Image (cartoon, rainbow over the protein chains, first blue to last red):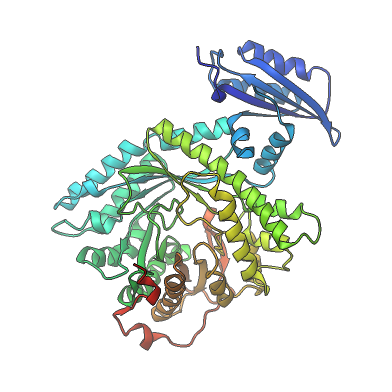
Length: 96
Length: 455
């Protein structure tokens, strides 16, 4: 098991036209891959649904790449755009 | 505690998706000083083996990091010790063979360019330097991924005018030998004043003499991001506020480069070298330094005010970026290549941007006359005159300057050259047709300026 460190945090950004089952589907994929959801935020921006999830992959058995691919596949099925990134990029870019 | 900052996340994604934020290059800098031998075949084999050993995972690692942060890493490259030095101990020189071995190594590890086929001759040439310079046109003809650079001047040493004369001829010949591809050989050949030994950008990347065994250097970019940030400012925002905005964006761009560079270096078990915080355009629409000038309020690149705009941009980029990295180096500033920047191409094609204006701009940009196509019948001595002028700007102003011009074979002013990919395309620009011959053929050195005596 990996430690609970910042490189194990991922941000998933989901955007597109709002519909039933978005949160459920994404959360299901994360549960399947043993990614713990630590925080969720959602909003409507310019008529688009946008959801952010903070996940922890410390206990995930699959690689980041596999998790990302599974999420992107879910995104395609939902016809939503999904970005999966390690959280470090946001921490580094927006903090001194 | 972890939390979600929606604004930061959306801003980052927008920078990448809409405004072309990317890591322009991760460049493995590698010393080849231990590859010397008196048998040139042995040198070639040692070079090949060492590059493969160090760089075999470079592309795979870069792809992995690209995936994790969802930020494109456009180029993976290698820079090496100036090859004049590596091949100089050989009984018989064969620099073209060494170029081919470098090319093969680059191909086998999957990088698109390898830099360092060059020499540092600001004060004079050794026998190996001369042999290397003379081999450049043929080496560029026979290889695909080699980039060549020669430093012919510095603020400390002055300008080696023998070297300048030779480089004029070398550039011309490099273009002629690759006439079937619009003279692309010259697009991979650059001569410098005050060349930095840790620059990750091509064509001038090489691994300097004072550098460690190896290092990972990163070049960031993002003209599109800067343009978007300026456009988002309220109409009529003054220069102080605009400069501050550029600094903030440069900080964000550079921090991303620092993160990627450190991760790459750690995974490859290499020391992290430097971040080159440059604004490097690509021919893609929206990824243009000329576009920044327009966002600042100039009708087009080349308008009066362009030099001032570039000076402010260059300075603000450095001030913003410096806080974001432990080691900033390389060229660091705004590049103004013509063929690699859609806005510059348009300005040059319309005649708004002239060769002379570009020369003025090089006194405040990060490098120099870059990727400019000139008529194929331009005499070699005129090219040497162009180089001499550019070297003088660098020498006196204690900055890096460079010349990468392409005397496009069989083309005249107004024609177009097409190199493809990142090298782009360019209109052939007029140069002054007055003769520089008697001047450049005097030989010797232009002495270093008085302010070189600063001890």
